Length: 192
Image 1 (cartoon, helix red, strand yellow):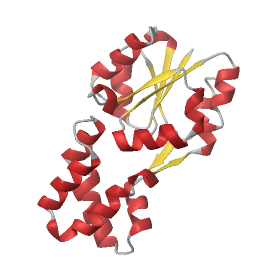
Image 2 (image 1 turned 180 degrees about the vertical axis):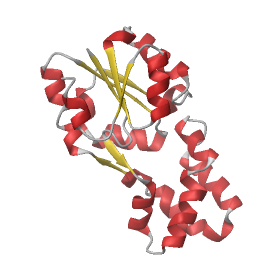
Image 3 (image 1 turned 45 degrees about the vertical axis):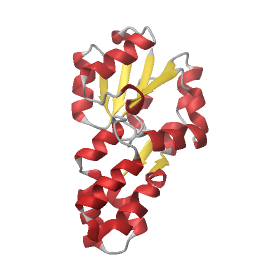
Image 4 (image 1 turned 30 degrees about the horizontal axis):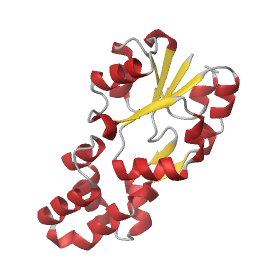
């Protein structure tokens, strides 16, 4: 069986408000920055590899000049938004030991991808994977699932996909992949 994992909120925490509260104590500012950055069209464009952090900062600062310093701080420290979810990561060697293959399929920005590849050693356990920024496609677009399947010659019915977003699970299932809506590492355990 092929186990396919999303990164955000499956292998690493991705909680923008929590991250922003670690940088700023003003809750109104946290909410404003969450809107400006993380709920923006540009955030998705960064995931799609169409904008770098530097380019996004320029756009955000032009649009919201009163928050220039805070925007720069939030984006320039964005690597800190992804912290490992130990319970899931600890299962990866167990999955491999049971004879299964490991893949990842994640919407991810270039800068955060580079940081993960450099610092998160467990990624070496994976047999392969796709980051959205590398292929200019993002979930839940059907093309990104097809790309992963084609790239590694996988049979969709022999794949299980773990993601925390319902739309991403539905899109995977439309491609013949079994989808599991991830809440905790326990959701993986039963398939090993």
